[in-house]
Each structure stands twice: as C-alpha cells, then as structure tokens.
Image (cartoon, rainbow, N blue to C red):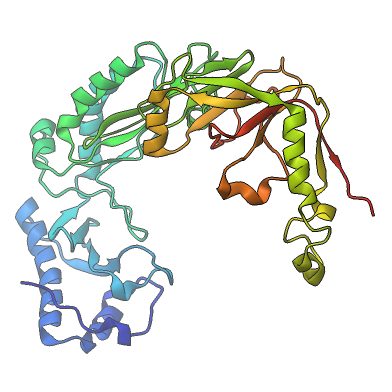
Length: 408
C-alpha cells in the first residue's frame, strides 16, 4: 500500500518525542487511508516479532524518530518508529526501506561479527594497529541510535552476514608505515564481502614516529599534512581506497611542498622556483598600488572603522632587502593537469634554517584589491603552511618585511 501523507503543515511543530496516546490524537486530522496505514505499521510490528522469534510480545509504547531539521526535532515530519516491546526489545520501523528490525540479538550478533569477521581482518593491519570504537547497523538518526538487525541469527555469523544488510560506521584506524597499502588491501579483502556499507579512515604513522601509536595524534596530523603521519586514507565499498600521502619534495633548500588531494604524489622537479627580478621590482608594484589608494576611504570615514583599504589603515609594505631575488613558481605538466581538475592543493613546509617567511604577492585579477600588500605563505620552522593558490604569475619573496605607517 502506498502511504499518502496528511497535510502536516497545518499542525503545530512539536519538538518532543510523543508517546502513543498523544500521537494518536495528532493523527486524527489525517484521512482514513493514512490512519489505516499507521494502524498496520503498529499491528505488523507485533507480527514481525512473533514471526521472527516464534513467541509473542506486546507493544508497551512507541514513538516517532528522525533527524533534526531547521527548527529542531519535529516529530510531525518523521516516518520511522521505534516500538518498545514487553520483553524490553526495541523494534524499529524504517519507512524508506519498508522493513522492521530489532535489537533483541544485537549484543550476540555484534560479538560474533567482531570475533569471526573483524578480528582476522584487523590482524592484517599489524599487531600495533589502534582501532577506534565502531558500530554495525546503527540507526543514524538524531533521536534513535539503536543497533538493529533484520534477520534471525542462528549462530552461523557468515551466513547471517551474507543475508543481512550489514553496515559499519565510525571506523578509524592508525597503522604503521611498513607495507601500509598492502595491509589495508588485505584487510578490506577479508572483511568487505560481509558488508553492504563498509568504509572509514586509515591514518598511517611515519616510520620516524616514536612511541606507541596514538589514534587522536596520528589522525589529526595525517589530515593536516604533518610529517609524523605518512598518509591519510579513506576507503569505501564503492570507491576502494583513496590516499593522501604526506610526501614532501624540495622546492629550494629548506622549503618543501606536498600535494594534499587524493591519489597524486609529487615528484622531484614537479614544483620549482624561477627568478623573476629583485625585491626592487616588487617594491615598485607595491608602492604603485599603495599610493593609488585613497588616504581615507569614504566608507571608513562614514562608519568610523576600517572597512575598505586606504593608506591610513593599511600602511606601506617595505621590502627591507631590496636586492633579494623574487621568484615565480613553476609547475610540471602533470601537476598542471591536477590543478586544472581539482584546484590548488599544496602544503608547504619550511625548516628553521631560513630566517624569514615566504611572502606571496597575488598578480591575478581576482586579488587586485590586495595589490598593495603581501601575504605570508609559510613561517620559518612551520611544519606546514597554509593552503595557498600560488599561480605561476604570482611573485614570491624570502626576506624581512616592515610596515611603514601613514604620516600626515
């Protein structure tokens, strides 16, 4: 039977889970077909339980469940239900899937999956692997996070897993660097045949990392491109494994760069610097743009605060080392292909042997309003710099920069 919804927009928004009595009152505004559908959902919950377990259990209570929307949790727009049975079991009705599931055997099933399917697969990741807490068949709803299964478990977990719609959630693991791709491939090959939804994050500790593997530390640093993490991987049944490898290559001595998007690793020579004049040339560009600014922007005068750039608020940027070289960045053809597909995904790292920051000067039209200033791309000693869309026409300067305040 196809469910036809009543006009719920005429009802007041309700921000609580309502028990069966009040829920029934709210449903009186629906047409008869809607009420009959609702009665069948309730009636069939008991029938589902009896058919599955060969015993009867009455419904003590039930309530609608769902996700929060713009106005918070609103029961009137929820179609899924949880039925609390007389023996303590919770039966879940999934409106979209059109099925019932329950938690009566949940603990037994989860333990069997862990012991017989996951444990052998996880062994492939190495003895030092650290795994987060993760769940199977957890309802991903704001108002119900129960773990439920549709089929009866008779003790054969492999047959059960093949029949059940098994989903894994919240899986994160940290592993060591040695043969990390091979370990992950073997893990996925062992476990994934038993799941309809199977995925998560894999953080790989660098071989130079000392001490026991720590889940939070390595995962965090893998995401931001810190060298203590070798790679950050994401896997799923649909797409396999995608890796971001924290593989830095030298641009100039003490300045390194990596590509921070999936499935591409920089090679030596992919990113280089080419001299494009001296700081004197860049100073002229900065000065021309700075002195083209009004002394006091009109909006700044009206609003009494710095809104638009002007000479008084910005100050003149002075490149102290006028003879220092300035550079333009150059990308190999293979890097340009990645940039054209995905954009600029670079992480820069500068060790402490360079005294001054790497400054970035935009030359493209999109950044014309900033042509009077410089941006710091990387600080000396930083393990990583900010993601910078440094184009080949932009200019780079290593050296001290001072700000000369406007004087009347």
